[in-house]
Length: 200
Image 1 (tube, rainbow, N blue to C red):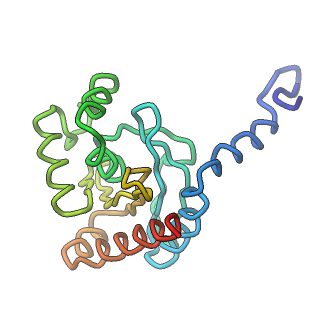
Image 2 (image 1 turned 120 degrees about the horizontal axis):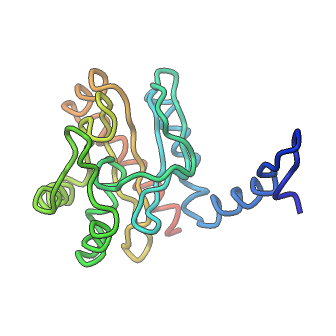
């Protein structure tokens, strides 16, 4: 069936999984729309752009694109991340029901080994309250030291959060753009375009 191949006497995963992965990636309409926007953001900003969804209490990179100035990290399509450390993850968490947030924290906890990461429920509650008040989430080196990010939620026509779109880059480039509001306006605008495409 193409799911296993034998190479030099060893069995390896076959390319049959590639077709399954493609089907999985595009099974939601939002994923098809978000892919174009991620590419556009990376091209316009020169930084790394990504679309993330929540599955089983973790964030999953569904689309990822690096602009001309993007730094290399271990991010890749399909990688799972703790929602409490990444801007994209916090943008999703902030709009989930409180019971669901508690379940996620109970199951996955916090990345306490990270120097700047959120380490308890009180910190998380305050952070998510701020995300809801300002409409975007920040990552100030909590996931990877020196790498900052900004993420905004994406809602379906029923006003349920279905993912987030975010940008990440070195602190020296991202921080000034956060202060000016340029990145915030750009991301909120892109999220709005995705939501309009979904609705109409």
